[in-house]
Length: 397
Image 1 (spheres, helix red, strand yellow):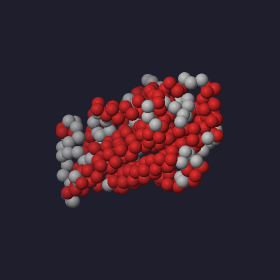
Image 2: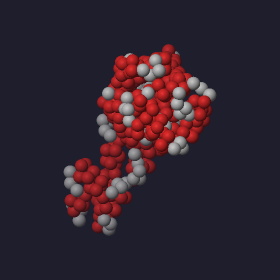
Image 3: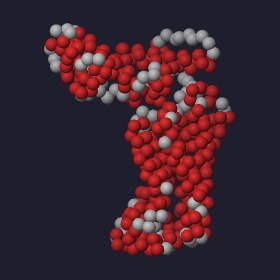
Image 4: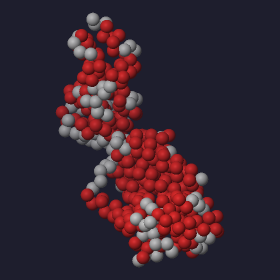
């Protein structure tokens, strides 16, 4: 079960990172957090249950990076929670110290990578026959100055500290009622953070307990029957992993209502909306995003650039990408790419109606309208207009 959950977790984490990290920066930390947690689960399976000499030789005695990544689970959790609560995903210069424990362990374990393969295989074979060998094997330079049990516990204690730290800033967020500044439709995020932090607290405490018991019992067979808590907590954590795929709004974070978005917005007229003041404030904020989006598209024509995506456009108008994503999904009920393609199609139609199709190819018209390829132009044009560009152009010959 642990192997299955770990492999699925790695796969889903990579999907989350590939499709969302560029648009939603906080999901970068969430994806890495789940990825490193899943790798740790895989690491545990190989070490304790696989009985494979080759796999143990590779993961325990050959790669210094596999264990060092565990030291990043806590920081990634903290960065994610902080970015969600502050609506700011940027790392500060002072944040680099969070990576020091990982760096220290990586350097300490690096020499073990260069041990002769035959010696690694022999050590792995010994570990397969006697799990207690892990208590005396010097896997890193730190093992010569610190008992092995403390090295294993240091990873979990670090995760526990970061989990408690994250819980602390979450409680502070709730006490200071900063959630009142958040769009009301996103308040379910508080429940998501509560579940995430609770599961991590259970997971880290159960793992600490199991490691202590494992060393006390010298990794006897009895230890391997005491993993119910770990299986439950890991299963719970992995179920959270798939939550973003069923509830994608989690990736939006907690969009903060901002009274002033950009200097560009200040040149636009304010809108008065009657009704509930809280709802009005949210509607005005969302309306201001819509005004900025429409006006910028009309005046600056960013859609003519082939690389105009949600992340690119958010930088142009200085509106966070997850705010834009929330606006398009909840207000406009339309994907940004479809919205952008409508502008491109209208631009292409204008060129065709001006007679440009008689001067240049339709592929060139698509390129001038922002499409990266002929197929994309034809497909999107037909999707919007119901006919191909060539049929549409024939009407103006």
